Image 1 (cartoon, rainbow, N blue to C red):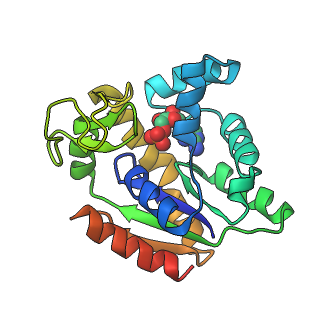
Image 2 (cartoon, rainbow, N blue to C red):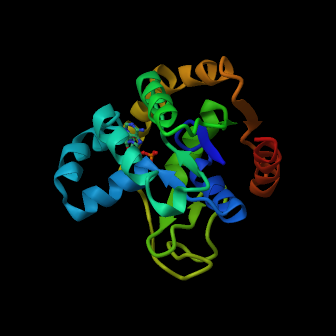
Length: 215
Ligand code: AMP
């Protein structure tokens, strides 16, 4: 099942991707996670990506397309994958289509998590992530039982460097200008399933799974 989870920063792609990956036994491939790992490692690619990430801008298409090309060639992606945070603009979507056409394995479905702007702001400013297991909390909406500690593994929680007010504004603008046009792009390919990404997490998961089951 070759799929894309589409949505603004804070729409829940990461949260839903973890659950979907387990349920359908296919990897969640997040360009944001791959880039953050490269930054932490201090690799050449990480150094090139860091300034754009800190500013909430997009990293070059060349870098992220290269990352995706390499990652989907791994054995665990043979039966499909959930792309999270990629593509982020029309050129990336076209490059993905070309890449997958060459492999004779076209994209099968795209699920959009639709969330209003005000809610996104609240989610992004309150987001905290567990350093050890990656669980995601929100200090306003779904706080951990103990401040700054993961409920499930007791690891420390941190705030992503790009989850600050200024960068969040830039990221949401970039989404509006560059990523939102993908909705029409995939609609015209008859691949888009739109889900209201608000309400209880489990109910959203059920709706996303119902869409995945038709893909
Ligand atoms: P995310 O974790 O998906 O919110 O991504 C964090 C940051 O990584 C973004 O704000 C961009 O700077 C960069 N990034 C992630 N995915 C892409 C992509 N497909 N194209 C360009 N930049 C990306």
